[in-house]
Length: 246
Image (cartoon, helix red, strand yellow):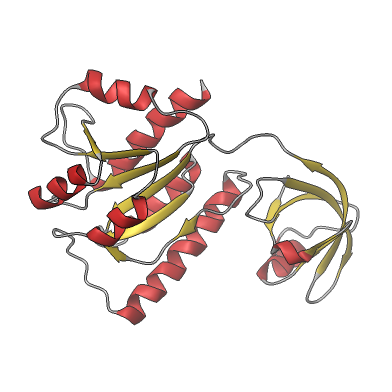
């Protein structure tokens, strides 16, 4: 079944109005007809609004609500990925895959070893692109929310954003002790908020690790092999998903 995201204001009682680029997709790409069933989410409350198409116009598709489905597709922990800015288009891959894995939000972070330098205008364009990728990945993976991609921030700003989160993890190549890592992952409980910091190519600087420790972060190891920046976050999310959903 096809799924679409709408603004909460477009859900009007028993009527749901779809606008924007999805109208063309429904009409000319999918060639759907009145009477066909689709799923709609507002990207915020985790609910699926199951409805049938009533009318297809030039600028809007009007649907009739059939029922609301709440099936707990989201992880029971809200995980925010703080991703050190990687080179080239790796961030697009990271956003797509982390959304598929269930991350709640993503914050791009400028670190000491980040090679990418973006001015304000380019940063805004990149962020909009990443947000569009997050929405497409949310649709593909049948999620009920669209994870938000925050503005690019400094490492110290990222630490402040993570302040107060229940779980704060930072994989570090010099960390040891897989048993300790396992204990920290298994200690994550439903209802908590978790921050996961991932370094860019080259990892974190020692001073950044020191600052993270002082901010209450727990260093973890991801094993004996050094992982790429686009792989490390996926490993952490896979471990959390296995722990929380098994």
